[in-house]
Image (cartoon, rainbow, N blue to C red; front, top):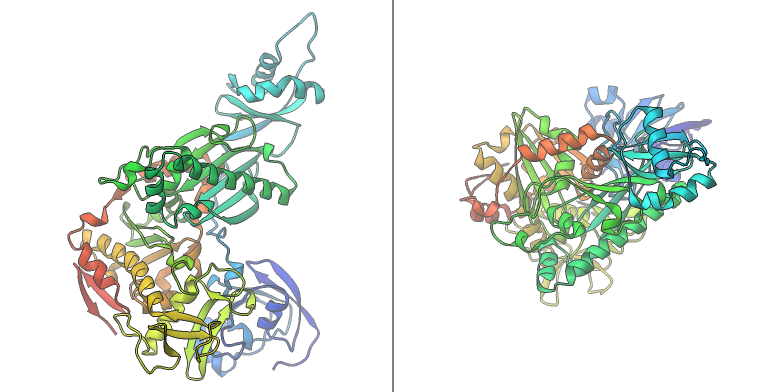
Length: 619
């Protein structure tokens, strides 16, 4: 323990939490006191190495032998430490990398941040109209357009009909002073002078919806929130929802109303959080996979599930919010980014836009992991994509004790000589296991020899038991048969094998199509809320991801949400998104000559290479 000293101010970034910490309190303990979630699977004993942080400024205790074993001399010089073994000796700024943050700090709305020039599609103009008189009786709408165009030298020629219906009353109540919101050549909203111009960016995922409220004047995100997609009650995956719509003519309307209702509620919650009003939202951008896009827009989806899997529309769409049922500003529009193919949608285009992966010259693989996973291979400006039905296992569905990444979910697992170590969301008592936890658990069981490379649980291994004619591993609770135990079953292993095989085989099909090997990959971008949660080393251990050096992987969170925000505040970014979609080539997995063999081989656990459907194990 470090020496006892005065209080020091510790700034934890990028969370932005600042608080006091004494010299005899570790940075890990300090972070937990301040509500900053830093991983600590071993409980602060310095054995799990999961609480890595970087001291950006300030003085801390000298690294002990355990940290010297973890970090290189260069890393130590750069300030890298284990939070549980480090004590402050002055005011400090501490950077907490994403891998060290707990799930509760990494919500489905967080994503890569990028810089850009604001070029909003809707602009607000303050004007003062001349008071009408008998000598100059000009209609209110005509007077507004004439004053606006004369004052700002723009070519606005139309007023949305809903805006026109409220125009006369508002002008008189505001004494002829107002702010006019203009999109292209149309007035889409009118309000008090200098009022906010708000935008709403939304990523509609199969399981989750992420929403962002943005100030269009300065591109600042005012609030963000994630909710579950209520459509999940009509089917856990895209195909089941398409099938439901196909069977029942009314089901499409029900699914559309469900997601629109969720978006309306989301907008209200975001505005309530910022003390604003939904009537101030003058523009929205929505991204999602092709099926989510079509259901939202009321487009037919039957053909998406039938070969050759053709969308009704791939081009970008602009739809009046009211025509979709969204209650925003009277004349506001919703911009839907372009799709690519039946199962590669606008969300993947948005991810490529946000990460700038489309600009890569070196061989890059970009994945957006979710219930449906899209993968792109980028080389020398060429982009080729596939779509994989990875299923809902990563969200905790179809797992015996699976759950979403909520309080009490086991999210990190390690098996050591002295027993099982796990960490739960919010450090609450364990109540289930989420996707990142199931990957960790199966990776650890495989590495410990409790599961073979084919995924079979072995007899007579510590924690393995047979209950109800099925083998299972007791992760938390009692081994003696308690119904309250949290377990990983043989069925759970099979579910994860199917999910991870879909992703790995998608990567391999792209590599084979261009005669690349895994060693040629210089960068792997992993997007999606779940993609941020996973431990890359665990994903490699089970063969979900290629066995490449960890520094080649980059986890970027909900980059699709970031891409939606870019398109919301920049017309240039919208144009770039359209360009990306037009350049992207799509490969249907079923058309690959080696896909079936590749998928089977991708189900195996362990580190291996695959080429043309053949698996070669590596050390």
